[in-house]
Length: 288
Image 1 (cartoon, rainbow, N blue to C red):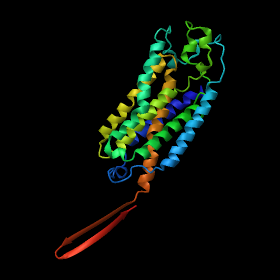
Image 2 (image 1 turned 90 degrees about the vertical axis):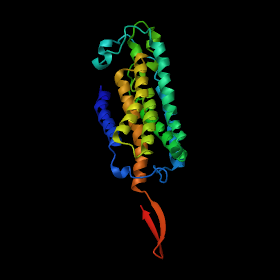
Image 3 (image 1 turned 120 degrees about the vertical axis):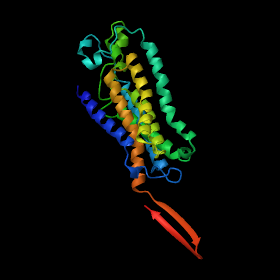
């Protein structure tokens, strides 16, 4: 049951992170994305680390998929916590449809950040942002596959293991030990909240209400995925809540860390000149 202690912790961190984006200090919004770098990024470094992280995630995925089958004789739906038990249906009639429907939210969420490059102001920094996004998804993957939060350390049965109208072989399949937490939801949330965060950072003139709207909209695709993963008996509701929180935090904090570094170490050189009353002048200003 220790995994459920992460629920209030992630809720607190997520609410703090999103509130920080909506009410960001003025000095963190006092810049012009047209002439200044928004993020401090070393594309080769971040991109290389991202590729290494994804490769490590792939390795640990093999460990997740090699757990072995288990017996379903002692499974009882009454052993499932009440806040998750309500999601267990009486039969599996709608499972296959729900599994397919979840993909309609999952894959577009992953691709969404690349639509940022339709903006001229953002497109000029495509390499930095691509490297950051690769880094963000790598962090999300490692949290799922290699951290104590994920299924390599938690053998929670998927909901379909509790349904008696499914064959015992299907219920006891090794893949049904990977319920906690939802990697599909965390991956989708990483994509949509990364999109919202970058779009917000390239529009420092936005009001708090406008930022709230974009982050609210970013929550909809992963919420859709979460609902369908629950209906598809792949996860319990608490699994998707943790996945949503992990993905949202990674999607927001990855650009925020790079932005904070850039704002704290910003430099800007401006040279100006003028002529009046028979005299000329020139000035040099360096801000760092």
